Structure formats: structure tokens, C-alpha cells
Image 1 (cartoon, rainbow, N blue to C red):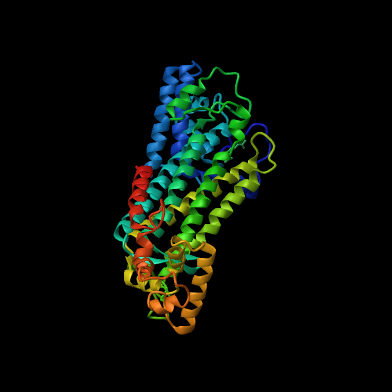
Image 2 (image 1 turned 90 degrees about the vertical axis):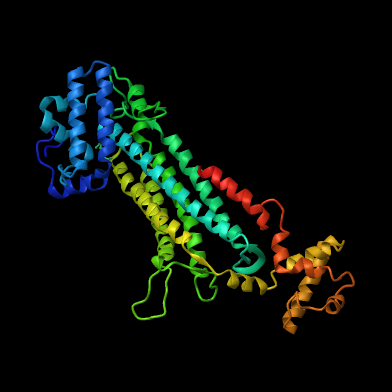
Length: 457
Ligand code: ARG
């Protein structure tokens, strides 16, 4: 296939250099966006009289035919082509002759690739948003089933205070709701058309950038032609949002790995999302969660790739920028694959409420409540804290829990204690009474579910 830029050069490109230069293996996936962009470009060239109506119609029909043929597998994308833009234009010219050669008037591959990437990522972002919504839905379903599942809340991975499993899951729902916000924000900022910026400086042809922008569903046009072709902020922003999503998924993955261990045994994953061992017959491994945790590094790597590739690049287009797509596509592929297994895995997991409750009963996780009981009766909190610490130490030495100490034993520590304390330090009460806004009480679950419903609808 003759190079788009043949003319100036006398010699052919070295084979290894040609392969090295080619991006078709990465950008061929943008063929739909490339063709759609070319159709809008052709239509706007007709409007401003650069192409005749007949030429425009022929080009648009020709592009439609190429799209159909690729979709139906009748036209194979040539792996030897330089990139998807060259390929589509070459096929069009092959099919239409000189009319096909007119399409690239008032356009460069620099604005073309910026356009295609924005269009493609807009679609991918919509897919990811949908997948995140599905995961939030799965978390909400499990939360609704587990508003009464009392478990220890942890700090430093040490049992800290009692909470419900619903509350724990909805914390992840909140994180993911912010991820939705970040992706939508980035998508909104990305939604401006670079088409018509041409190579770097715009064009002397009379073109109508607003027309093609509107046709392609953009909210407006990039106002500086240099910025239009050299901006890849949208790749960085989206990958950064995706890296944060992976960080969230990785935290949840880590919890699932812990919860499914025999040490915790809070959760059992469906057989559909676990694997066994080739030698140890008893094993049930949380491979999906481990892979999600492991793949997080890839997406962080993609972000660093993009930031480093762009750092220090002079305006406007530089070939370095061809490296953008592999990174940002990998970030989307990875996140979407992770979300795709995570949502059904969460929805089908079995929760071992009895094991959670048993864990909540150990570890003195009602100690704060005992200190609070004293503080509510006028004992300064610092004093109450100290006294409770001494009581816990006494319990550990004497093999008791705060619930099964007698009132007499309590009175040895302070005369303030009375029968009423037992009610406040029961594990159930410790959760139920944490009714402060956003606290662990089941009365706060509905507000969280309502919020998540609202942000996902
Ligand atoms: N394959 C190129 C890329 O992805 C397309 C733009 C080529 N532009 C150029 N001036 N060589 O960046």
C-alpha cells in the first residue's frame, strides 16, 4: 500500500522501520469512529462548497460501504497498513478513484487521530460507567440483604467497633459513585471537536467546524488549533479516573480475599468465581479478586506511560503521541474486564452472618461504648477511656468479656457503674445506637441506598 505521504521521499521505508512506525494493530479498533468522523467531515465539505453534493454523496456512501464490509467481515483490515486512517482512505480511493482522494481536503491525520480517539473513548467511557453502575447495584443488593449482619469494623486490621456488613459494602458504593463522577467530568471536558484544526494551524479552506462537531455529538470545538491536535489531557484524565477505580476495586478485592479465608470465613464466593488447586483438593481460591488486585498495577502503569510520554513534548503533534492509545485502551480493557467479573461475583456471594457476629463478639469492640456510657454520665472522656482500658486489661488477664463481667466487678473500678451499662454495651445496641448521620446504625442504610440509586439512575 502506497504511503499517504509518498511524494517527497525517493526511497522506500526500511521494513523494520515500517513495522516500528505502524500503529494499525492498536488503532484498527477505532475504524467505526474513523469512518464516522470522515462522513461528518465530507458532509461539512459539501456544505461549504469544497466538495460538490454528488462528490460528497459518493464519498459518504463509499465510507458506509467500507464500514459495512468491515463489520460483516468482508473487508479485512490490512495489518501492513500504517494506521487506520491510511487504511480507510486507501480503500476509499481504491473504490472511488479521484473522488476518494478529495476526502482529506482541509484535514490532517493529526486532527483526525485526535478526533477518532475522543469519539472512541467517549463510547468506552459510557461502557465503563454502565459497568460501574452494575457493580454499585450489586453492592446495594447485598447491602439490602445484610443490614442485620453485624461484623467488626476494623482499623489497622484490628477489630475496632461493630458495624454491619451493609455499611461496609456501601462504603465501596460511595467510592464507586465518585468514580462515576470523575469519568463523567472527564468525558464532559473531552467532548469538544478537534476536527478542522488540520495539521496544527487550521486551514485556508472555508470550513464549518461547528457543523461537523454538532454532527458528531460534540458540545463545541477546540478553540486553539495547536491545542486541538496536541492535547491528550482527556487520555490522562480518563486513565487517572480508571486508576482510582482500580485502586477501589483492589481494596475490595483484598477484603474479599481476607473474608473468604478460613481465618475470617465471613464470605463464601460462588463456585463460578473461584478456582481450585491442581494438588490440594480442599482449596477454593479467590482468583478473580486476586487478579483484580494484581491488574491494578497495569492501569497505574498506563497512567505513568501517558504522563511520561507527554512530559516535555513541544507543540504541536509529535509521533510520541501515537503511544497514547495503547495505554489508554489497555486501561479501559483492564477496568472493564475487572468490573465484568466483579459485579456478578459480589451479587452471588454468600454471607456468613453467624461468623461475622462471632468475630464481633470478640476483641472488646464495645470498649468505646463502655467509655461513652461513662462519659454520658459526666465522667470526662479521657478518664472514662483510661478506666475502660484498665477494665479491658483486667478482662484479658481474667479471661472475661465486658458483657460477662459482674456489676460487682465493675464497681471495683468505679461506683458510677449500674445495671444499665449492659444494655449499652451489647453488640447489637452498639450498632443500632450509632445513629449519628452516616454512622453504622441500620437506620442510615436507606439514606445511602437512596443516594446511590439517585447517582446511578
Ligand atoms: N498513527 C498516528 C497516531 O496515532 C496518526 C497521526 C499521524 N500523524 C503524523 N503526523 N504522522 O498518532
